[in-house]
Amino acid sequence: MKLIRYQVPNSTPWPALDRWSNLRDELNSFFNTPFSSGFGRTAQLFTGWSPALDLYESGDHFVAVVELPGMRKDVIDISLHDGTLTISGERKRESNNNGETAQRTERYVGTFRRSIALPTRVDPSKVVASYEDGILKVTLPKAEEAKPKQIQVS
Amino acid sequence: MNTLTRETRESDRSQAEQFITPPASVTEISDGYMLEIEMPGVKKDGLEMSVENNELTIIGRLSLPAVEGTLMHRESRPENFRRAFEIDPSIDASKISAKIDQGLVTLTLPKAEHVKPRKITVS
Image (cartoon, rainbow over all chains, first blue to last red; front, top):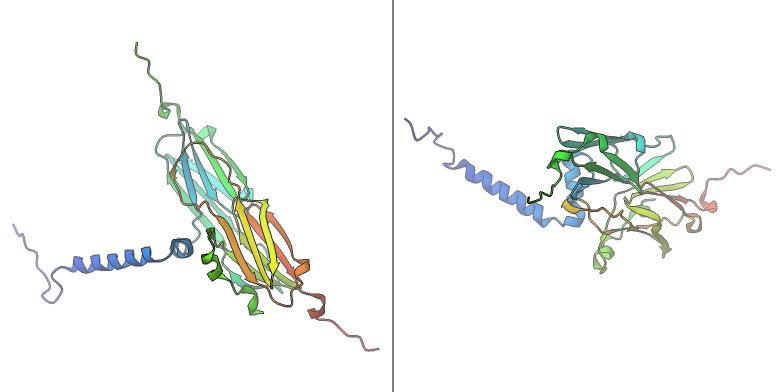
C-alpha cells in the first residue's frame, strides 16, 4: 500500500494552501465591498438577473415574496416540482424605436429564474399568487401530513 | 447632455436615514429624456419627487404587504429608495411628469421649447 503519492518535484508541496489563500483573498474582498452598493450588482454579474426572494413560514403555510419591478402579470411563471418552487419569467425591452438612445442601462432585461427548496411538502392545488406594486407574493399551504398536529393525551 | 446622469452618491452616505440606490435607466427620446427607476413595494403615495438647484431627487417609501409567519430567508432590504440626478439645463423642470406601475417609476423629462429644433420658414 502506497501512502505517499508521487509529486512533481518543482510544484509546491501543498498546492492546496495556495488555493486557500486565494479563497481567503476572495472572501476578504467580498466582505470589504459595501453591502449597499456592490452586492446586488456583483451577484448579477454571474447569474444575470436574480430577484430578491424572501421566505416566510407559519404553522400551516409558506409565503415567498419576490421583488419583480415592472413586469407584466402574464409573463411570470410559477411552478412547483418535487417540493421546489421555481419562479421564472422574462422582461423584454419595452421599446426599441428609432430616435431613442440609451444613455444608461442599469435595469436588467432578459430572463430570470429563481428556485427555492421548501422544507416540507406543500399542497400544489392550493397555491395562490398575487402581484402588486412589483412584488410577487406566493402563498403555499402545507400539505396535510406536514402540518403541525396537537396530540391529546388520553 | 452628459450632465443628466451625474449622481450625487456622496450625499446619500452622509444622511442619517439609510437608502437603497435603485437601478435606473435613462433613455433619450425625441423631445426629452425618459427615466426608469425600479422601486418594488412602493405605491403612488409613497413616492416623493423634488427638483432643487437643477437636482432631481426621487424618494420611494416602501409600503410592503404584511406577511404572517416567521422570516426564514431574507434577500430583500427593508429600506427606502433614493436616487438623485442632476438634470440638464435644456429640460423644462416644470413639465416633468411621473407615473408608477408595478414598482417601476417612469419619469418623462421634456426639453424646454426654446431648445427644441425648429424649422424657420423663409418669408
